Image (cartoon, rainbow, N blue to C red; front, side, top):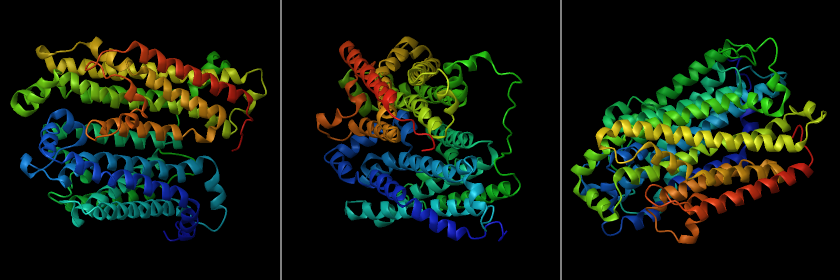
Length: 537
């Protein structure tokens, strides 16, 4: 065993030197996002804000999104309880995703690119790279946890205790460690790094979707969900440290399984073999469109299935909304004053969230063109009569197609499941859900255009589009509960679009954003046509 991990500490030191900028952004970015909203929540808590938030977050729709709270009465709902209730689940989810991407990138992806073979040519153990990577990820998440706890304590807010603050931070840190463990196992099982990334993120998404149902039906079942060991620690209320022990044990088990699997497999291979291809290639591969569909088919199918599952998971909640409304006078009065049914209100909110997730796939497809370019996979195409126009517009066109189909599947799945769950009490039909989904189509096109603009003029900035998507999601998610200036709220593209069916469709906004998106795509094409190709970048 010692020979297998020989000189792992040397690799760890090198990795810490290599990744210090990424670590800084990781800790400061996610740490400030997790901890720095305390002053905003203090504003929400003024007056009757705590009572209003408690009653609002008790409905099944909100519970499925942010999780439950152990507080039984509004009078016991403190600032700390509200902060953990609203923030912990999503922050933990982000930590899992970031850690999973980091682990796969530094293990299986480097193996696929041949970098691991180069490292092993020295006196380095065959599993030293994995051990160094997982230790680095654990150290980063511990640093993140301490940073979050320290920032929250520094505000000195009422009910934001020292114990609760560091439990909040450690819950997020352990979520990241869980994600790293799952990713390391998937890196051994899957045949490629892309498959390992997809499966790790798929498992994380499955944990979130499953807990959405169990949190509403019976929260005790959420305690057997690894994701539940993070947000059910209930900082500032129950301070349940014991769940972190389960997370620690699970992480150790994942690590052991990963190292056992890695010790028995060949480098570059996985336990799930790649599916054998056809003896003769299809004629469709003779076209750029056919080639792009071929190399993107796996990620497209995975994401589209995820959209269907996500829509069905949220749609199943609609059956409980009417009962909740009838049993809660305060929420009933709130919705009566706004003249919007609880189903319509939830649809407008959840559709914005779902379309934000749908937007990820088109961005991935546009950025994939630069990824293939930088890996020299398109070299032979450059030597043919294939033009840059074909490459660019095929990539953008495929992204637009994926966005349109993604909206249809997400909105259709949500609507179909919701109508079935509501039964005779349905207040909306399938057309309402589909219309609410395609109402956000301009925002999807806008994100595609930003990705195209980056591809044409600054391809290495393509990942910044994800950051803006996340920024827009956060701004819209908290926009309803935080008093923000209107101009600041409008920096998110979704904020310009009315939320159907709560609000009326706006033709001028729909057309304007669509036209702007098309113009940006064209500008991106002009840059792509003129810039140098960056093979091997």
